[in-house]
Length: 272
Image (cartoon, rainbow, N blue to C red; front, side, top):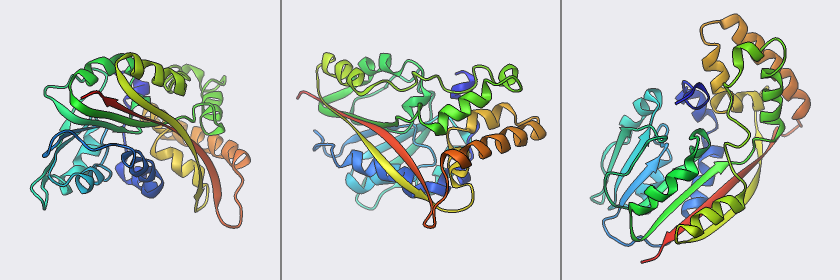
């Protein structure tokens, strides 16, 4: 994977906004229909620290669920969740690079929460993933659709400036890392699925000083922080300049700082 798709992750920073990050996954699962087998076999692609993978075990308590991620830092946090569940299911976690992940068995549900934006060419993987679904199974995912929002546009603008372009060229995700909703609908439908695709914009009210910068440090800013990790002075200079841009784009209010955050959802049901 390229530098843009293999940042070093900080689970503690990521989990500072765990409530906002977990909510879309719960709403995605609410649209997943009954699974074809019990106990079900479920794959969670890009499971991160495992805190939302637990939602799968709560919804399907007898299922055997495997969370896959390519970050050692994130996977180290999953130990607290791994093992048998109270009603006979099981939670496992394993290392996998989603750019080349090919299912090794049949699944009833393949699900992904805010991970595919880091996987170049993920549309091309849908065919093999759907082939691994049992008849009547479901492929469901959500991704941030914010690449044109000030949160990311200002970061790209700064990274492309005279001071930073030589050090940060190619580091950030491309503007086509997430496609328009109709692209996903068309691909999933042509692959033989009944597809439901929609978007939701969350008006996230974040608390604390420079709250939007704090949010970005857990996700979108990670490639820059990784690229400049060996030069703390440069890392801090970029972060300060980006912070100043965010302060103008997302001014605080008496009740917090509002970060409008659009997410794209898709649920594809394979015909039984």
